[in-house]
Image (tube, rainbow, N blue to C red; front, side):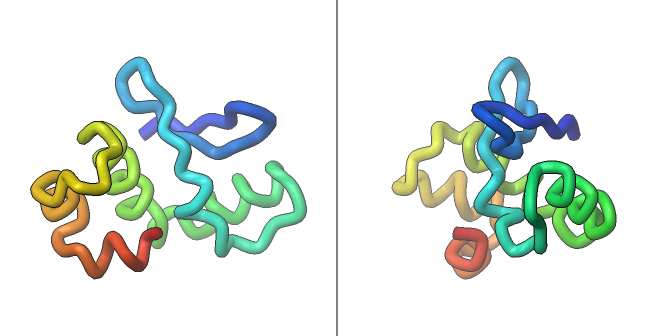
Length: 85
């Protein structure tokens, strides 16, 4: 997984030739700026890796909220999607 910042330090995951915004996934990591966010993510990476991968997979499905088959595949069930959002 490749992480990056884009658009003035929005956290993203590189997926193919696209960048997926995953800032909502990590919003609960305490931080005062991008440097604190990435440090906090590194410290907690084992807790966030699956969520980041699922968010990137969701976006790869076309980012359609009605693509329930894709959501079920990416999140296992829709309760996890609600928790992620």
